[in-house]
Amino acid sequence: MTLAITPGTTTAVPAVVGAELRVPLVTGERVTYANLDHAASAPCLQEVRDAVDELLPWYASVHRGAGFASQVSTRVYEQARDRIRRFVGAHSSDTVVFTRNTTDSLNLLARSVPKNTAVVLFDSEHHAALLPWRGPNVQRVPAPSSSGAAIVALDRALAAAPVGPRLVIVTGASNVTGELWPVAELAKVARRHGARIALDAAQLAPHRPINARELGVDYIAFSGHKIYAPFGAGVLVGRADWLQQAQPYLVGGGATSKVTDHGDRLGVAWSAVPERHEAGSPNVVGVHALAAACEILSRHWEQTVAHEQELLTRLQNGLRTIPGLRELAILTDADKVGVVSFTISGFDAGFLAAALSAEYGIGVRDGAFCAHVIVGRLVKQAGSHEERAVRASIGLGTTPEHVDRLVAALRTLVTEGPKWTYAQRDGRWVPQDDNRTLPPFLA
Image (cartoon, rainbow, N blue to C red):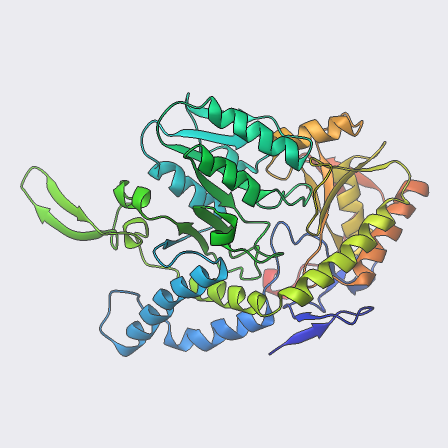
């Protein structure tokens, strides 16, 4: 088992690939990369890479071959369903459908709900959860100011919803602010109104244990690339009936049990779930990596949470010392995972991100984080005229030095200005006369 002791702490957490990566600066130096962009995509766990390397010699077609390697790959693929079902504490009867990512999973669910289903969601959701739901029966509730207000708002929205099937969409942890939403309490409200509830766990799954039965949720969606398994797999876990009754999300091989020729038309008998919504050759490598990441995190939740909370406190305390910095927040009473977004008065978010990368070797995200509605509202509340912010996000590869470097770099940029000259090109800030060389495999 590969563990890493984070420098400056006593916490042993699973090690990530690229922890010692060195990147060039515009000044000609090289520094260890400070990856503070885990909320966008997390690096690969070393144990996940090992699991993939172990599988690759056996890689073959899934569900379609009599060869021994094909049987091995099929067994790996199918066993991953149980491994992920355990990771989220789902019911044994819940189906596990493999997808490309969280966006794919939520679009699949949106295509599978019964006709005229009333859908209720907060407008603070990530686009993956906000945009798939269209039509007159979709009610977008303004983002609340507290967990208690969220519960009251959902209760009122469901009370006013049309009679018939109902579905609530809620995030587990905001990808903008890192705030943990009161999922279990919202699920109780949903259940009282006869509604189902779907959990967007993309930002929750890498940071906290999930138990669908304890939370009372009906569906859970999350992505491998955010949970240290960046091999192109995601998952939708949940009740099978709506998915079974729906037309296949994609049509093609694997989604069909039989196709017959009737001259002027084809007769098609669709497979049952989960294969019904998994047309095409399955991504067995990505699925295996995702299942491996789930099991690795499950063994290290105590260390993972302690590591993150220690660094989150360090980060927030440091950011409070930066003149003009405003941290964004939706819920005033919520705990957080290691995600912090902020604005700095007088500084463009894109410029700050470019300078942090070019001069200090720090990776952060700038923009609206695929959550334009809530980011636009929050930055205006913070006094900014732009609809962009900077986001720093912590993960298993983050060290105290990374956090301290970010804080020191921001302080220098705010009080002394940049060392380099920057210009906007195609809407992005870039350093002028940038001589940094790309790695050899891109040459």
